[in-house]
Length: 310
Ligand code: SF4
Image (cartoon, rainbow, N blue to C red; front, side, top):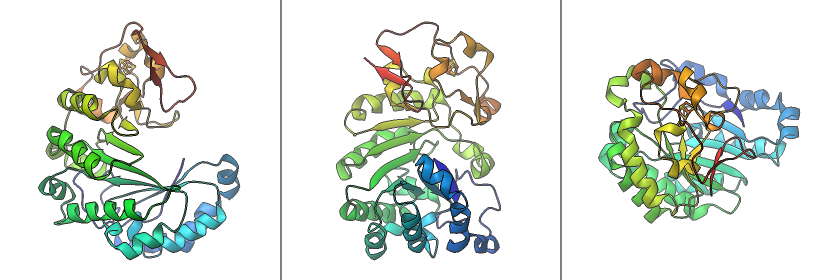
């Protein structure tokens, strides 16, 4: 996957946004005109075409780029075989005309973030009144107008505000959008505004574990794919490791292995622990798995899905 930032502005104001302070400067938006972004991406055309990797458009909120459809149409022409992916708060999808036009472009993967099944909690996280209603309407449009070349991932980031009610969120998503290709639950990274608002949003693996395990038990097999991102293996019962995705590429620098990880049988299948997590909470929440667990196999074929359950 190759990441390209296509827009720095956003129509939400999430308390756990990982973008740095000052990123949403209106003056800087001029650096993201569609033609400038296209030029940047096209300068790597040969590499992208040859590798066939997904082209991941980041922001800000990409869908509020004033030339977003033009940008996508041109990328589609230049890269007919690469999937184009982007994360969105889904609010602009509430406008049916926009969504219909967007979904005329094939082979897109949309990651739409929903924070809660309760409007009050969701809107408290985005800090925008009515954003929940817009996101849900946006998802309804998305599932109404999408075709088989479009993939939809529904995401949520665990925070103090929502983790105890995560079960209700999965229930709502299953009732309303059972055909989602993936449902993903993300442990937060404490960067940007999430670091500034750390006291407001902070949670530990110990706190979320019982809620996540109960939900995995109930919903894990119901959705087509149910993923956990940014979780080391030892913070979740091995019964659920098949859902744990190694969410960063092998050459990333955000996580590391502690000295005690050397005693862990599953170290070579684990993401490691986030440096910022250890900086805030220490190393006590992690415990090496000293021997092989019956029925839990390492998957050598797929780096991102490191565990298979027999
Ligand atoms: S002890 Fe270390 S290597 Fe083992 S699962 Fe935990 S974080 Fe991963």
